[in-house]
Length: 350
Picture 1 (cartoon, rainbow, N blue to C red):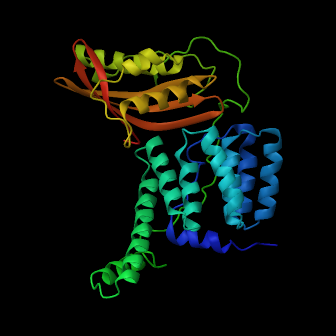
Picture 2 (cartoon, helix red, strand yellow):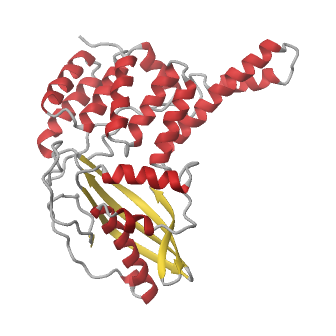
């Protein structure tokens, strides 16, 4: 029997944008059918069956971030916000690199009018990925909701204030069901699996010293040997080769969890994301990197442009850590400090 989405789920679709994780994490070939089955059950409105299927899978692979995320989506659609909040909250603790669980956690908080909690969760999502457009949009909506509460309180205290009512009406119109640009994204189906399996949820045995290579785009593999390719045409000059070397050294230090070399790759002019201080940012990066059993960072399609003492490096970054595999576009802005090139800005999705 097909179940209708809960009133909470319908409300979320008309206000805030839920995120789908399946476009971010690569699905192992052996498990793709399980993800697809749960997605299909969700699309069919069979939430109880979808939840049972997810729980059966997680009984043998309890740390799998993809299925845990899908379970949170199912719980949201089934009208179990408390359970969904617990699922997404645990995901943010176990996989703080992922912005999507923070986003969906914020959406659930907002549905309960806990806008301060929603704001904090969205700020974490944006700190994790400053280019995450969905979180920025939702944060704007949260601020609008907070403004609505403030305007309502102002009108309650001073009913003769003629300047408040138009502002309040404008915000209410913004959140009307027919308003443009406030629709959620539906959970997307799991993408077609790649023939190269990603790491399992188990912590792998220690591997040889990591290596970083500039290679043609292909799925990341923890056991894959680096592929040597000719230097790109854009890296023909001495300065461009120096920038390339600096970028590869940064990725190698990250893979090796060598925090001294990793942090030294960032110049004193580096502006940490959000409102973090440099000290707080370094501490956060240290906690995230050192705590991983294994990290592999691979750069593909590296393109470098140098103009005087400034340079940009654009590439596709394949990041693997324990059971997590993420691929994204990244841009590094660098400047020359003495004889070295250092990073002053880091952008994801650019």
